[in-house]
Length: 303
Image (cartoon, rainbow, N blue to C red; front, side):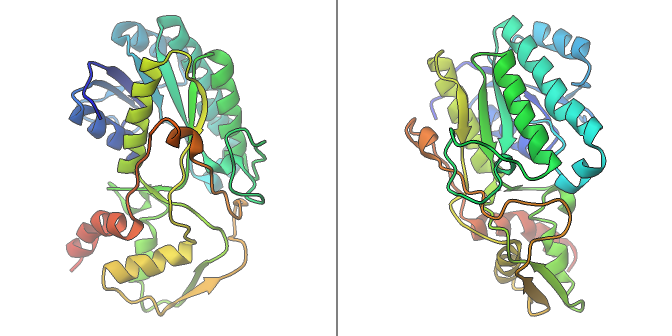
């Protein structure tokens, strides 16, 4: 990507995707402001984005060209049990952020999910009607609508299940599978039903920064964008891949061909990437290559 004088503000900056976006943006010599809350560390500003006055003060001070709104509650099973709290973050705070972004003249990209679809008729185009199956998907769809209503030039970027360099294994639903693979003395079953399209956060960050550049070049570019990973994998497939690249056993893991327990998940939520491809935007990290890089140090630490 061509280096430009661009300033972005990232919410959820301490999270898995937020960290990757900041890293990529800084490699482009962009100016970056990062907002975080529960894990606000050095270089990040602690802001509760559910409090509009705090957000307003930051936006008026920073005046970013574009806001990347990555902060969200994203664990479907957790959302089922704390819906009101989740909706406040995923919907209400997102709507406020979009309205405030518009008032200071900033573009905004709202990070959404393939869970807005029910998974029965893939691949999903950007104009297909969403039908979320669980409360997480409902809040993200409501968040999309709120952001697009609050800021006419807003963009929504739907992405699939993510993985990357985690601070703890449970930070990603993909990397946490290492625990299952390593527990070779404990026979277990893992879902082989739901088809997923995992993406390395480095690839998503690349997509995001390419999209930021396009948005700033073209004021009329807005609306919904999507990017799915290129490899279809069930969680069982991911376990096998993790075992293979790390030279671990997986004979103790049995595929479960029934829907996973907990909040209902879409069967096959593959999204059509053509709108971004038409803008010459793309990025991909092969799963085995990416997951080996992410998990090798975790295995080495325990040996």
